[in-house]
Length: 396
Image (cartoon, rainbow, N blue to C red):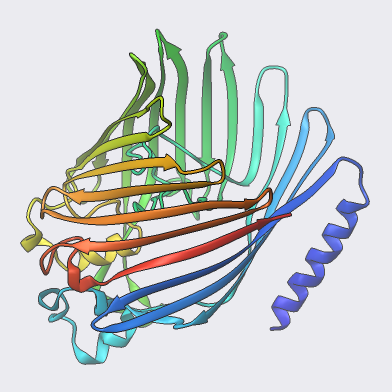
């Protein structure tokens, strides 16, 4: 508690100093959220309150400082045993004395999500600090992005910041060269990226090369000394290409990445997608995703597959998936949509009816229900629980 008080005091002092400066913008939002799910005939609930404070300061045209502070409190069921969501055939290998270590806690958090300084020079831009790293053109899945993994049910929710040094260099009139370094304990384990973005004919493209340590865990072995599951870090080298453009009024995109691994088998990921808006304003979109790291048959899903999926250590448990979305604005302020994720490997899918309401200029209401359809042991099995989420966001 003492550390929290010191942090809040320092934050208030820092904000006071910045507010006294010229050209400082302070804004953000308050976000209450309710999440519920029905598991084994029990309806479990989790409530959260999130306050995000953003500030941006540009003392000169070529200097920008920005930061985001997040304050989150949790209420309701704050400890979830992940084994309750997994098939009995998978959890049977876990001994009774180890079942308690598979608990996911939701603890109140105060953290600095982003804080970076951007310097714009004549020949390049330099960004230093904790910043957003967004790679690829895919809507739900991004093969070239080794920093973030989206939730397929809520893919547009904001991603966390990452500590990095980034240099963007214009090349000609339509291309940009980006160099990025994200430090860890040693140079060899740190992430390095080089990317060239440009435009060819009617398509934007990006060619990306990344080296990064991938920190898998073995969820069958618990390290009691460090109070975590056994970490299995290994080097990952990626070469990827992403494109986006339009053909006959249809938006199209693709993304491909091949991964060379030091220990695990090499694998590739592929995304192909398209979208279209009709004259009557109905929007449709579909995206196909292949990940050869995933399994072809749900009978081969093991505890590590499930846990790595839930811990966002890998993007998919099955090898092939399809995402589809239909959205229509009912009024200027209300839109309804229906999305689905279909796992081709195990023939399971989830339906996600979604409601969005712009109640006023600075207040949005967002809600969805996720309904699983699949037999036991599949990605979206009925017995894993269906649920929903209600979220409001008030901007200030």
